[in-house]
Length: 139
Image (cartoon, rainbow, N blue to C red; front, side, top):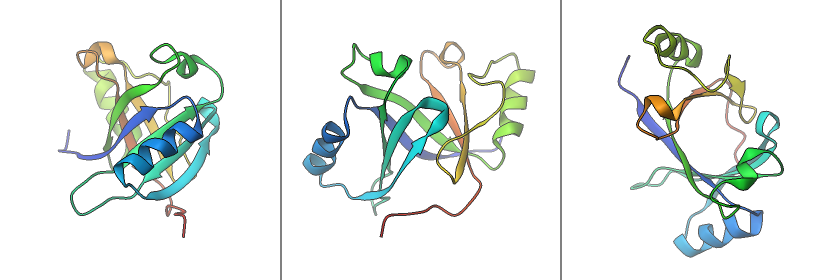
């Protein structure tokens, strides 16, 4: 596998308001927002800065993520940018490591994603992200 650049850190939050409290506390700026149908969750990505990587705040409306850390939220995953998420998944499967999804799912309109099951990465949920269209950033 090629070396990968970290794409973002994903943090589950119970509400949009709680996500904005952290954004304001840290002086971060919103880059873009979206909704992921596959996981029934709102997303807020912060901007890349000169010295930082973006954070993805995930606000689930239903499903298992609503119970993450007893509903309080917390750090969910680290994500790495890849050229071809399906090729990475195939490579992982061929080496005996399972993926969370059978095939990559659409994140926001501009990315496809899949996750390495945490039992293969010492309990860390790792997301692989492929950019497939221009990002629709907030202006």
